[in-house]
Length: 520
Image (cartoon, rainbow, N blue to C red; front, side, top):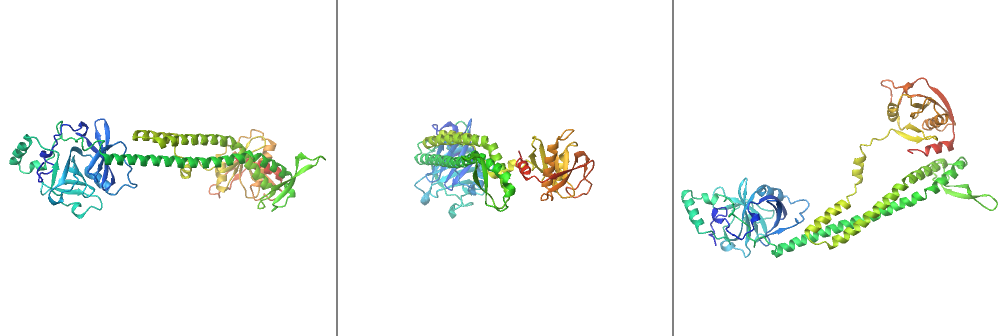
């Protein structure tokens, strides 16, 4: 047993344990994860691999672990200062020590001797205080140490700046020649040997097998507990994901049921439109003849349709047509989505069964990676909004004429300007004459515009203007190349030439059929 006054950083304390594992020699301390004031995980770099070592001050032991135990979230504030003290250091030795005299504890502390760019350091797992400390050589008295870092809640006698008590180090007897060499060096330069960090060579400091081995029962139990905790977290994650998938499937199936009944809404709209002029605004229901169902006398059955009294009968029919068209277009996508969700539920169920039975850290890591690949996290609404943000809002509404041609109607005064700027020279431009309203563009109409297409575009120009309630309206039309915007003019204000006038009369049924094609 060594003398209690021998400093831990001297050449005398180099381990000569020939049975120690070779991987610990020259290992560098890359990262420290502070789990609690008494526990830390050290990530050591050895040739060809990283090694995780759990340092436990409760037992004064260290054990190699396969999985880093879960760190607190957020990280402990003291972790950053601990890392600045020891990270990047080279591990030279690991020894056991007990306090000398009256402070001697039953359990020995575990000391890791480090060489850092800031000088010699010692990382000590001390069972008496049940805390981890960082020590350094006292600049005034090189033969003693001071505490450089202590976790929050450390006792007064162990806080930063205090002198570390003298210790008796066990299990490391020097060779016969080492005391003689140390004595000769001290005669030449007293105190120099105590302040110098030894070089760790092939016969230098190594980790005794007894201090870091799978037989460390308490630390092995801790690692196993962490494994159980990580497995439980994965199981709960999968269970939560499966419940969410089931709820999503129910919602999508409800959409599919509505889509499959959309034909009934289309039929109701087609029956209502011929009768809409006879139904007063504010009516809650409409009784219409259904000629698809005839009685024995050849009379049609009477069908009662529930209406929204806040809007007119024609607007109710338009709403039903739009909804039916939207659902019919979405039905293939809804079916594909249902199949995708059911496949994800099957995968989630299989992974749940595997997670409940997984054993071993490597198997758990492999399964966790498979979960990430098979069930990627769904984007939140905020992420969807950010993804869709680059898609610029269109300044117009789009409709389809009877012949399939597109008709664009500006949404606002500023949008009218944007719509006119984007149109080509030979596109048709229309506007209700003498009143405020939207600009209408018919792209690529050809040399001789179709009369029915022109009439439907004029109908939209009249509808989206202040003349929409009139029995008829005059609509001016010309080519886009004859439309000019004066400098400083108000939004939507233009001048035009080479124009002609088209008189349109109210035709509610035709208008509603046209409005129902929006965004088609």
